[in-house]
Length: 87
Image (tube, rainbow, N blue to C red):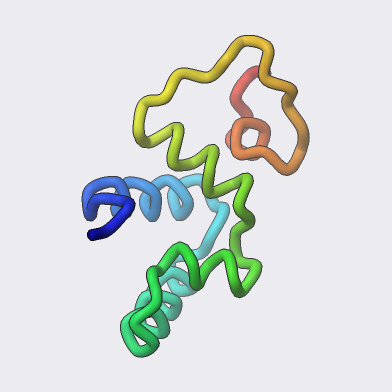
């Protein structure tokens, strides 16, 4: 059973590509590698340091509609700042 639905995975990919955080060709290469190794795509992306766990966590929260706490401490490594959202 997948932890992320296909819909959430596609939304994550769209977010990462549209915001310029990961190039579309990098995603496509990673998809091929993931399929060839039977490894989840986002595990492969984090293992190869293409994205980090913090970015992935924030991206999942954003596409899943999890509200952000007003007291969230923003830093440059976070998705919120990378997307130029007010902190």
